[in-house]
Image (cartoon, rainbow, N blue to C red; front, side, top):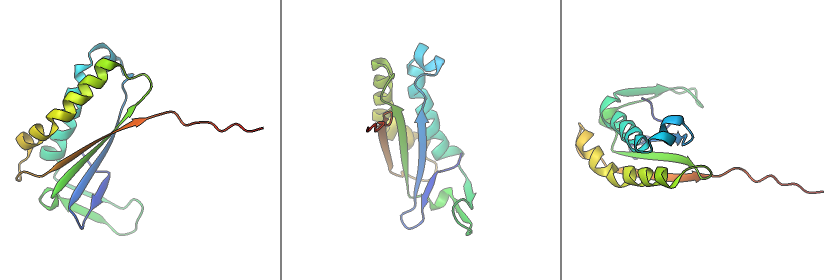
Length: 128
C-alpha cells in the first residue's frame, strides 16, 4: 500500500483509486464493489507502515503511520456503464466508511474524507 499524495503540513495521506465497474466480478456481484472499497480502506489504516518516494522531486519524501493525522480516499467511477446496483454498493461503502475506518484504525481515531468523482469520456472538439 502506498499513498498517492502526502501533505506534510497537515498530515493528510491521500489514496487515489479508479474503480473499473466493467470488471466481470463487479458486474456479476455488485456487492463485491463495497467489499473492495472497504479492503482498500483497511489497507490504509492497518497495513501501511511507511512510504518513500522520489517521484517528481529529487528530495526523498518519507513518512510513517504515526505521522498521518487524517486520510483522504478519492474514488473515480465511470459515469457511463456503471449500473444502478453498482452505484448503490458504492453509496453503501461511502456511508459505512467512517465506521469501518474507526474499526480498522490502530493509532487513534483519524478522520477520513471520502470523495467520489464520476469520470466521463472527454468531449472531442470538432471544428471545421
